[in-house]
Image (cartoon, rainbow, N blue to C red; front, side):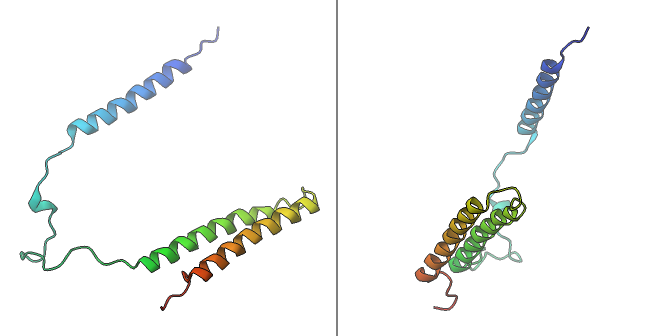
Length: 118
């Protein structure tokens, strides 16, 4: 006779995870110490902010790179499906995808987001 112990195993797994989370919340130190959270600069009070200035332009270039990189990553597997698909449908999808990619590039170029020096 075959017994189904799947429910018991899932329940034990859930209970174990729940117990670990609860024990972690109970055992951690949760007091706030102002001295330990302040920046330390050789015993002196910091003269300036501990945060470094971050270029918003560099951040926008990085986001644009990530977006185009994901689009290219989505485009590359289409080469593998070339033999399995209808050539007309494949061409329409490929041209549409590349048109959207080029339209995004034109928009970023037109907005001046790709000009590093203003």
